Amino acid sequence: MEGKAVTDFGGNIFAGGPVILPPGGPLYLQLKRWIVESISRGLINPGDALPSERDLALRAEVSRVTVRKAVQQLVQDGVLVQRHGSGTFVAPPAQRVEQSLSQLTSFTEDMARRGMAVRAEWLERGLYIPSPEETVVLGLGSGEKVARINRLRLTGDTPLAIERASLAATILPDPLAIKDSLYKHLDKTGNRPVRAIQRIRAANLGEEDALRLQVPVGSAGLSIERTSYLASGRVIEYTRSIYRGDTYDFVAELRLGDGSTKGAA
View 1: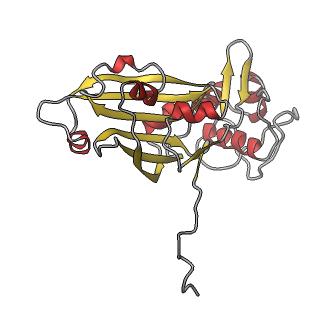
View 2 (view 1 turned 135 degrees about the horizontal axis):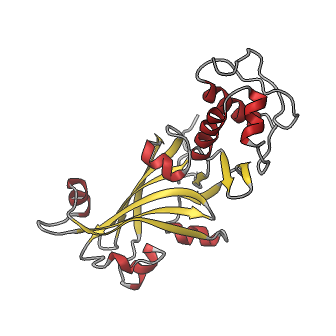
């Protein structure tokens, strides 16, 4: 049997003594839980370096393969970061972002107002045969194509959201023309939306989205569906987004309606 698991949890990762693993499950999962618990208890802080693979294996009484597997999974989960030539470190906490629900703005505009530098990694950009859902929501006719703008939104190296926007090809005949802000481009062409209906739901992230957002599979996220309209009432944009639950707060200002207090108990 490789290594051992004991019932008591404890041991500072930097103390130089033995690593005492929590019981239950494969050894790499025990080590993984121990590292996560050490971080949550403040025994390891963001930016701290982990001991070497060899040192950690000796102190936990496991193989280096076990250590490597635990560390690799924690890197995939965004708990640890590896820097070439430097080692493995505890990842910094994700910066939380607030977005108002009372204004119709683009992601780029919203982040710029906060002085945050954002960038996008393109996931899909082009003209396609629309799905039945896109056809209905955008009111597309027979044979019309849809422009899709799918991208991963990041601030620095931290992914915040995945945006999947759909527009009629007649509105956006060249999706490659979008360089940064979609709304900035629509404003130039006289097609900027003036109102939108937005639905927000809780969601557990699937494998593909979790990998792109650098969080564990099943992590809490926000699923946001936005349907935007021109002044004429035509639907101009249909966007489905997934936001990391640990980085985003949506804020709405509520006001008392006229006469709403009359007759109230």
